Image (cartoon, rainbow, N blue to C red; front, side):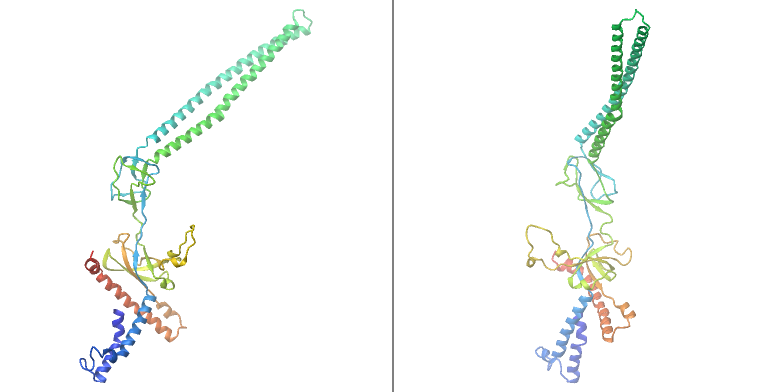
Length: 411
């Protein structure tokens, strides 16, 4: 509408003034409802062509969209294990810090496993004390066997000396018996040393290994018990939380509620522009948005990023070949926008639905590029100037937004 009115000022109006004051044609006589087209055909035709050119140039170099929102991420409150709720520590719409407890499950089996792991550790500790006692007994057994061996060796050496001296008081059978007895005592010493080595091996290797296994089972049992306590992973607000003691929650099908991070979706908006704007919108461009959550307010924005892919072209491997004729309507260019000035979007809740304009500015190019011709400079000036029309259109839509939403929409 604004474009048409502006174009009519330089096309239809001059044509009418020429007919009225130069040719002397009067409204209601020569200029009637039936003769307007013939009399003002040059102005009407020029107005239509100029309006189409202005609208095309305007929407190409100054893209607009009604698809703007501040998307935010939610975190589902899910336990790592299923079970019935034993305690609830928070309420709906309550703000929590990272690490704050939210709910606790019964965890009867987890507590039983923890007690079993602690009992296993106590058993290993008792076995270690028993092994130390066995080691002391083995050392005493070695000392006893060595003393008996020394005694038998002394008897054998004494009898052998008497035999070598030719004494008739020594019998050969006695020497043989003592030799066998010494060999028996030596074997007893070796057996006692082997017994002590076995006990020492238990203390040094077997019992530490059993202790490590028992401690690992204890840590596992503690980890499983910790899973029964559900805590907040981020600073967030709890939503859709109506859990009661005795309710059953599961990590698969029965979540407890939703966490909305406090910083998610703040100070950042995602806008979807037509694919025709792909070569126009660049990071650093200035724009404006207006949201339903804050009517009558225009918020200056700046483009910080442009997604380099279009979502509708996404392909997931399946068991069917994709037929391109079944492709949906052309997707949009996703543009990330942030407020040009700090604090401008603080009152806007995440998820706000908005409209946006982005403006092409050739001011720097006109100031710095001396190689531009007169026609090109004129065209760039026109492009920058008609952006005012788009800005006025945005403000007009914001003024009419409460009326169209609350009155004319019929909701």
